[in-house]
Image 1 (cartoon, rainbow, N blue to C red):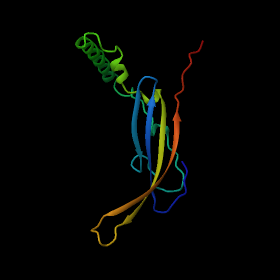
Image 2: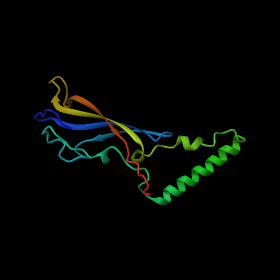
Image 3: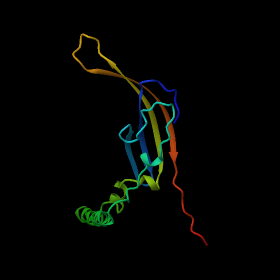
Image 4: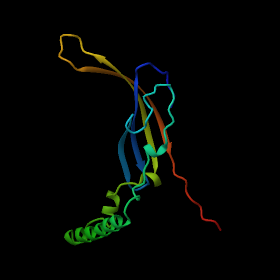
Length: 150
């Protein structure tokens, strides 16, 4: 990202991410500020941000937890099927799952927000006022599909 630098500005990036794999969707927000990306407040007018700040893999983590989660979904689907006397969509729970962002097409709306601290006038007791301006850009993330070798 590039912008016109300003002395004393504090920069942060807000992101709205929506991913779909054709059946399920995931929507979430991300904030990238000085705590997440060291040096972002060194307002030099340029910042390289890695995609892993916005796109992650739901499958990373404990494989045991994933197995228990998958088994629980199967049991819950069977229970719902019995309770509804077979009137439930066989893919009901599958359709309720979240899309895994790393494996899905994602639209990432980035908002670069410039903040400048100011002071209230003397009629108020302490505190600061925060003014900000922002610009927006949309990035499309399309995962690479591995083609098996013949």
